[in-house]
Image (cartoon, rainbow, N blue to C red):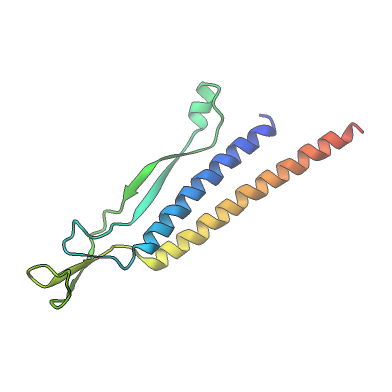
Length: 137
């Protein structure tokens, strides 16, 4: 494995963590959204990652992280009795999103640190390549 492959792997990790941060931001932005039924309430979304190592061994693709898709949470929305709310159903209930802001903030910190680790791996690789080049002079 070449040192240059580290850039591909770290780049795919940066891209994956960027998707993760975007879904977290979307979840936090919609945390207070109210729906008139369980179907219209916002459901938290989460990216699904997989390793691209197996496909890299079979062909000439580089290894790394792949985003397989984004799934919605299966946790039901919170139901709250609020008969005076304009979005209340005929029984007086509104449905709040199932986003847990504390969990989302913890996920954001984790994604940010993973992003930072990938950047550090790229910087270390760059330094190794530069030192290797300077050996010849």
